[in-house]
Length: 340
Picture 1 (cartoon, helix red, strand yellow):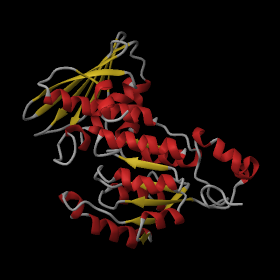
Picture 2: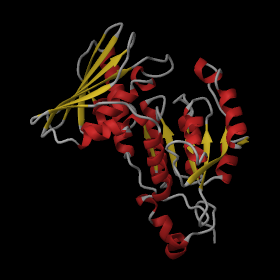
Picture 3: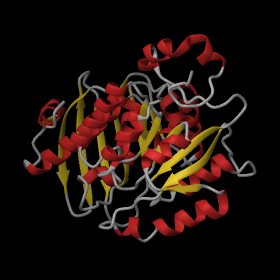
């Protein structure tokens, strides 16, 4: 009997049986590898530096901060012709995967899914993510979808529903969320949080809503601290700076300060009733890749799909506020408009 991931059953799979695994899928279905073997990972989209950075962390046992347990074995090359950073870099990244890590290139996502246990959807362009994720969900492979999760809020909601329909776990996140420096801020005892300021680079890309392209990083940091519960967003904009102020249901305020030009550092400041805590230092990709591997092993997402949808509703509401001259826009309003 085959498992849902088309690999030999491990002891847990054998004990539970097919029916039990399917019934438990909503609780998280891990990527089953043959006993003692690394989880076979496939990559979709080769037009971002993440594909080589993540693969080095996974495949190179001598790499600093090597993340064990998985190996990238196959990849589907895709790119977006209307995004310069995508079309001009994809060939080099593809060659590097083949030369340095012996990753096999395949002709389709369906072929990729036949060879792997889990998937990294890495296309730098969020627009194709929905259609690229569809065959992955149909093949019942757990998937990490790199930022931005989609090119529109409507597509993000559609991805959410596909995951529910096929009972396949997925998550999306900026690497920023798992930086040691941000984790330390989250763990700090500032008392009752009154407000949070997250600032960082926010260059735009014409095919994506303003914050989706790069403002997703400081937005992710904001939600890392405040979590779900934002009700409305108001936005102020200028040539150099974008400020989106969110009001949470319990009265907390989250301020996203997007920097367009000049120096574009990033930081999170938490204003508690006991003290003020500031993020010190930066980070790298290793903590995110560790979280991805833990997710592939357990099927339990470190970031809920609901939180990701709310994050993108926050950014879409900020865009709508800009279109409406800065008036506050309720997240429920944009969610409804986009089919939630």
